[in-house]
Image (cartoon, rainbow, N blue to C red; front, top):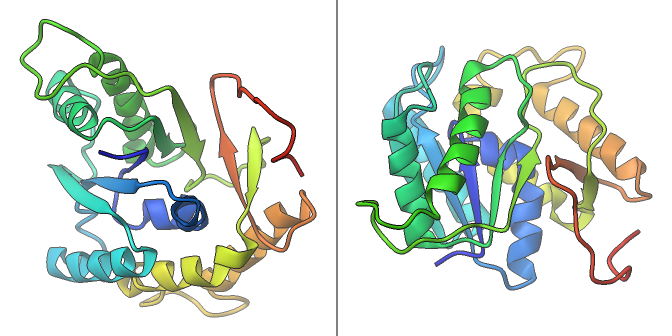
Length: 229
């Protein structure tokens, strides 16, 4: 059973969007799991076997308590009733308090379909009188991480300070060499250099070295001001 379930359209999206948060939450004693919806293949320099090796290496660096792949089709991800039942079944079995999904606006159809699927599956997970596995559960919130293919200038709901976790996050992302190193230009800057600059930008907004932004369709609730920066 998980405290947080991160749902990623492809292996590497969880690392890109919230690798620092995963590390930070685990340091705080929370049990985090990642569910990759597809294999992420085909890609120009990858293969199913390569992506599996890269995912295993990144998972080890993150120290995840649980990671699985739902086996849906890459490039054809849809929020169908069949896929909704599969994801709702995982939610009912893992019983997370919070779900993390991609930001709802993106150029990548798999990403927007994933967010719709998460929202629909969250609702189905609470149904009774159903043949879905596990007991009914309704995660309290869906938060949205940014792993987008649009040049957005979003206004996040909050930014998490991941300064102590940044280098470990970068190491996890670097495991996906077929996606972020092979065939990528290195001038005027590499893809990984760009990620560092982006994390520094978000960190600067809250007076930290590095940050990760998050969105939420629903209002955030606070019990104390102690955690605010």
